[in-house]
Image (cartoon, rainbow over all chains, first blue to last red; front, top):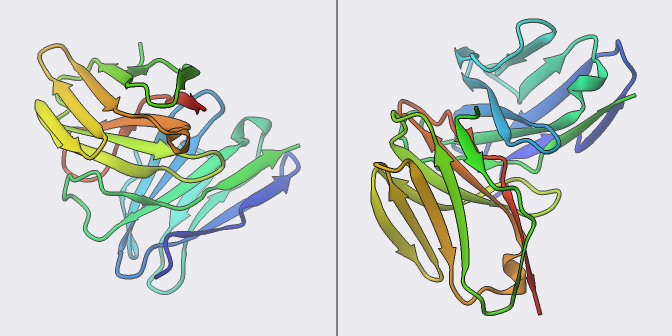
Length: 116
Length: 111
């Protein structure tokens, strides 16, 4: 019973390149959340998606960042024209039902982006 | 001012000690309170969940919420070296699993 799968685990990009982070939720889960963890800071909410829908993107930077969760395949967080400040750990989490308020988010092990 | 404040530590205790971890918050709309444990280079895992004020106990772990003081605590009894990790408090106003996290407290339990 696989948990939340994220890849790549580590990604190195030069300034101006694109980064694509992928997340496959736990089996049976249809809700995906992306969080970013900067050094010395807590996890910050970025976006909440269901299949083919963005439910809440209030934490996403207005430019360069986008997320999708297609009908088939993993959720993708895309960062265009990366800058050094994008260096962080990006965590994906999934839940069986959004809005249950239990806090039961199942996190992946994260994708660590380093921008040179 | 951050919505959720948490002492980053590090906190070092001997094996068997009682550990107290705390968070304060400013948003009175928070109703759901959680503690996550995060081992180095791993994703967070849910330890405890509490709705509104009160206490909740699970084995060696006790979570307390005092909404009047906007203060939550996690107590770990008989601490073990395997408890060494970063402990993150998290909370939400409801309506989904959009959580606001503290910065985490790094705990080390020494033999």
